[in-house]
Length: 247
Image (cartoon, rainbow, N blue to C red; front, top):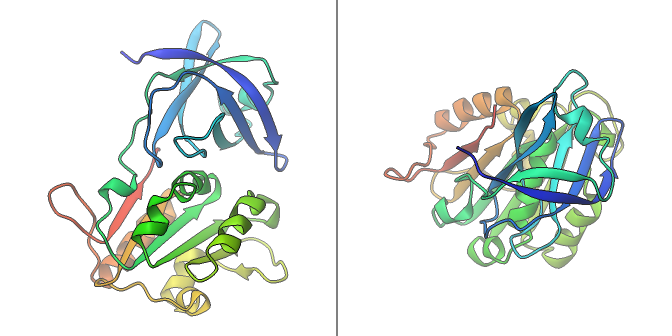
């Protein structure tokens, strides 16, 4: 049975009509960057919880989650209405194996995210480990529209601190915006435009790819990567790509 601890809303940021970040104060046990917590509210006599990646690095406080409000969902419309000082339930421990500890050493670390999956990579990039282990780190963030490209100051901070080591490529699938590539991540990878823009190539001998976000993106990218010779990373059989999918 899941153990819950009580937390308190320390802050909230609304990025767009449907995108929110919540900052939480709670005595969460130690965790690794890349893990997630379950967040819950008591609704009509039932505790409704969902998993959310932590955006903050393990030593950073308050805790932070990033989510998209689903109007017909049982939880997110209520989460988005919470205010500073309100109570919330979170799992006692963080979970998940989408962490750098399970990633083999390599030259290039590729981070593919769609939508709010960006949050898990911000937690990882806010630690020292990736910058010490990998020569090049490439973050690809796919969204539908420009107002969904969030955490710009955080990403710019990585660019400023690691100008030779870090590359960031935002991608929009549903609208055009100056200076931002338009298309689907999988199409841009398949036709070569994605690798050309960041001036790196995903190669079985030099790269590891992390995939988090939309199920269709993950499924299509897995097929494309395996066509190129990359294999899924496992505890017993180290490979060249790792996935995280909550639903």
